[in-house]
Amino acid sequence: MTPGRWRSAALAALWTLVAATLALGAYSLWRAGSTDQFAWLATLRALLAAVVLVWWTQLLARYTQAQPTPDGDGVLRSLRALFPWLTSLRMALWALSALAYLSGALDANPVALTAIATIELGFILAKNAVYGSLVRAAPHPEDPHARARLLSWLNVAAPLSLALGVVNVVPVAGLAGAPDAVSLTVYGLHALLDVAATLLALKAVQTAPQPRPA
Image 1 (cartoon, helix red, strand yellow):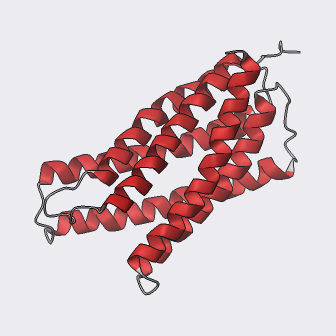
Image 2 (cartoon, rainbow, N blue to C red):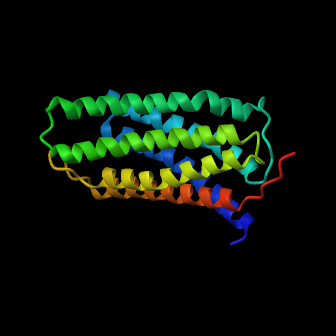
C-alpha cells in the first residue's frame, strides 16, 4: 500500500479502537454491576484510555503528514498532562491485583500469576512509552531519533497487547471462572483491534514522509 493508505488505515483502526474502548468499559461495568467499586475504577480506566487515544490519534495524524505540532498546541498539552494519570491509574489497579496474587488468597498456579502480572506491567509501561514518545516527537517530525524511539515502542507494544488479550480470554485455574462466550468475544475483539491499530500505526510512521532538518 502507499503511505497515504497506511495512514488512512491506521487512523481508521485507531478511531474504531476509541469507540471499542468506551464500549468495553461500559460492558465491564454492566457485567460486574454498578455496586462493584473495582468495576467503576476499570470503567474510569477505559474512559481515560479512550480520551488519551483521541488526542494521541490526532497528533499521529499530523505527525504522519510531517506537520510539526507547536509546543503550545492544546491537543499536545492535553495529552502531555493526562496520559501520566492514565498510567498511574493502571499502575494502581495493577498493584491491587499484584497484592491479591501475593496474599496467597488465590488458589492459582504461582507461575501463571507471575506471567500475568509481568505481561500486565509490561503492557502498562509500553503504552506509557508510546504516548510519551509521540509527545516528544510531534513538535519535531524531522528528528530521526525521536521517530526511531516511537517506532521501537510501537514495536514493543504490539506483542504485549496481544499477550494481554490472551491473558484476558484464557481462564487460569483458581483465578476466575471460565469466561462466557460473550465476554470472550468482547475482550478478544478489543485485544485484536488494539494489536491491529498498533501495527498499522507502526507502518504509518515507517512510511510517513520525513522532512529534512532545518
